[in-house]
Length: 198
Image (cartoon, rainbow, N blue to C red):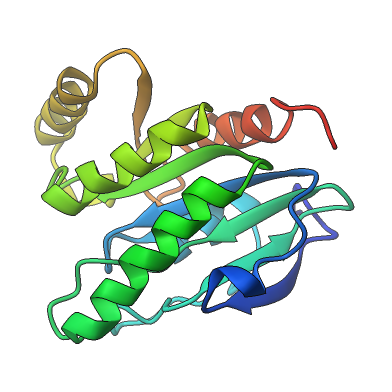
């Protein structure tokens, strides 16, 4: 059973003027294309196909707003870093994401989805720079951990914690094996309860 049975899609935004009213609380999910962001969202909410998954990286090209209940939202940010996307589209995404992080008082936390086999890339660090402006918790999901050996997974987790320091929390995660689900859900709930409703 879903933790958020009332969850529903609200709207997509291609520019800041299309963002929904900035009230209540929202947690955003960001990640490099093909890092498993949509699968992570579906697993955490226990809602199959809630966020669209695709074998073609870069399909999430808009900011998608989902209501979890009357005052809490989940926001699916565009996947980034996909080579086949035009430079114009990549520049548009950067501008859109910059507008989002600097415009949303209701943004109370960020999940950064990173493929555990690849680690943090340059654009992930850019995302973290944007996210630090929100003055809320940042939690990194090291996804696809089921594709690593136990030793490799432990090493990936240790490296992530060393690189990110104490201000960012990090965990191993696998949507297919349900690894780390409860930990991730705990962080989502904490983010959505972290700020007063306006």
